[in-house]
Image (tube, rainbow, N blue to C red; front, side, top):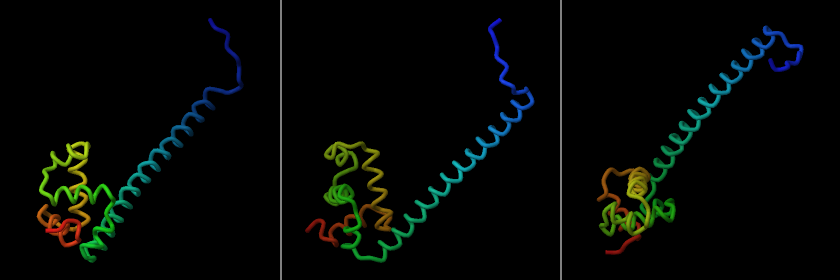
Length: 128
């Protein structure tokens, strides 16, 4: 039998310490969940506010609010390229382009690609 050392802690004290540790870990997990929920809610709210502000603005303000890659994707959409063709041209995944398209629709507060094309022309991103 290996040698054991007496460290002066009874089994009862050890069990109590374990319970306190489990309670603390449980509270940390609850706090992590609350933090995640708060973060998700924050992003949803800020997204709604941003969309509301953009939809009140004109096409040129919308264009100013887009990231460079979003403008690039919008330009290619307006040129009539498919999601697959855009992905190939930009050397990014189909899913990434699809996410950009969805984000553009949401930011512009429109529901179809034709409206995005109209906004691209109205904003001066493309000329006729």
